[in-house]
Amino acid sequence: MSSLAQQLSNAAARAEVENAGLDFAGLAEKAKHIVDQLTSSANNEQRDADLPDTDDPQLLDRAHKATDFVHGFGRNPFKGMSRDQLALITYDESGSFTLNERRAAWKEANSQEEAWRIQVTQAAQEEYHNTGKQTVLATECLRHFDSLPVMEQVLYPEDTRAQYQRNIDLDFNYKTG
Image (cartoon, rainbow, N blue to C red):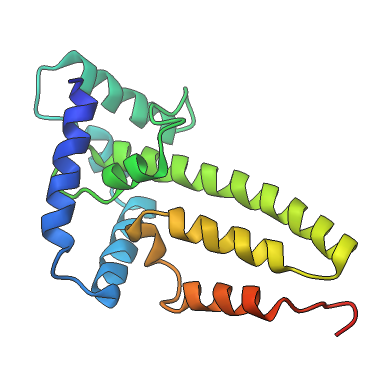
């Protein structure tokens, strides 16, 4: 098993235990706090100095690549990873991943989200133009929402799923009323 695979496995086990007692509001507060920490411009020197406590050259190399990436140099070492894997890295506060690794993982998740939003917006415009409806959009948004890791779902209002489902059930035609 690779170092990263082991880290992800350990992060998943930690997340299951740490998040078990938290309700929606507790998870949302935790997620927002972590995102604020990762996106803050404060403590950049501390983030840059943060290295894994290891001699493993793979882990050290990935940490350096993540630091370079968050400063605009090089490729994101987490590019192309799944949203679930990215969330495990982003929201893991154990120290297994450096702050810059977590920030790079968060940035990759945001990049994937932005690509999805561009694609779904184009499809929504086509649907509206052709049918006057937004049912396919609501269905795609619900599917996407359900596919997100829990720590990303809690960043949306608690009734997001129900709102999408109401829009699907309504099947409203905006052109004809």
